Image 1: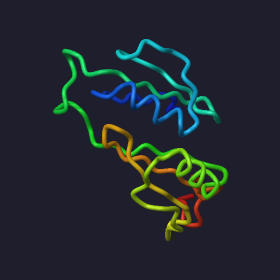
Image 2: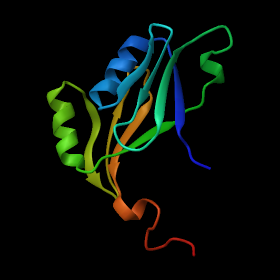
Image 3: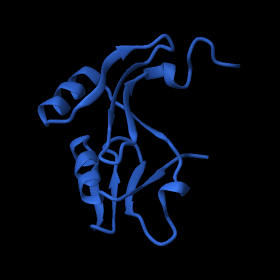
Image 4: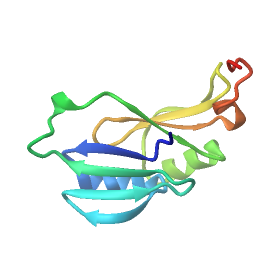
Length: 128
């Protein structure tokens, strides 16, 4: 199994797509303001942004955190600061051997930019 698609339901579709484009994702489907799909610059994952419709409401949504790995988190952090994005937490080394920074998209979804390298799937405490 391979996670390859995440959809965010939003009341701010245009702003949300622009936010993720600043993060480096590329728009590959554009039906704004109703829907857009973006692909990550690395790997095969895509992210969709869809406006609330008749079958969606705030009550049906889950609280999630989106994680995007960056080869050089500190450089990416500075690039995004220069683009005017505001972080809730700057790059910080964590006890689980990841370096993480946090910000929120226009919908309030928590975004974690991180660098974990081999420790993402193979930490020293991995169950064998």
